[in-house]
Length: 96
Ligand code: FES
Image (cartoon, rainbow, N blue to C red; front, side, top):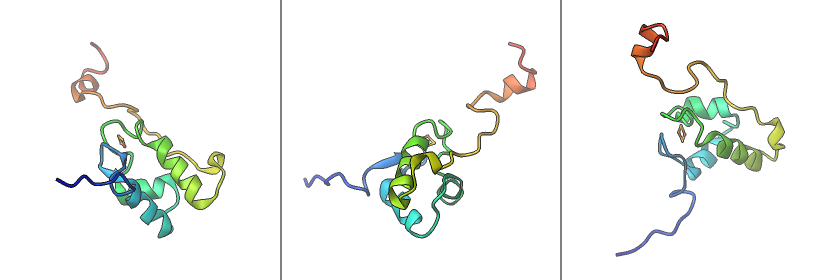
């Protein structure tokens, strides 16, 4: 049994959407170097955790690859609800 060495192809940046570090690097190299663009093209940050598990890593990778300071890498736009909720809660108008 051969064991695969950990590398960009086996490191998951977004575990929810199964997006690897090598995919992130590939699309940044193609010019998609904002969180919003990568979100649209790869669905990174659109899983059940809504980017809580991957957005900081994604922003760091963009900063590293583009040479921009991390403070210049904008996070994704946040739209409510900010975390997954049951649709019944909305239907009840928040009464529970
Ligand atoms: S880890 Fe990326 S959306 Fe959850």
